[in-house]
Image (cartoon, rainbow, N blue to C red):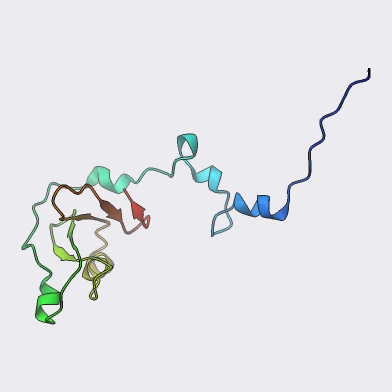
Length: 120
């Protein structure tokens, strides 16, 4: 019996495209251990802050209701989430560059990094 050579099919265009992210860079090159997304370092430099008033002041001024309230983890500013009509938490990030907000719902550990556009 002669040596058998393993036959490998050439990679399809779809397989190659799946390994690239939206910017055309190799996603695996940016991933952490075991394919995890890169760590968000913004959470390491956040000061200890207390939330301000538990209401969205811009929504109150416009007589609007909100869906959820978020607290800026850089300064404690409280404003409505992106699924509210006002979306004032994102507007706060755009004005201040404060990167991370957290939910004010009791027992929630949800945090969002606007820079990385993902949960942290």
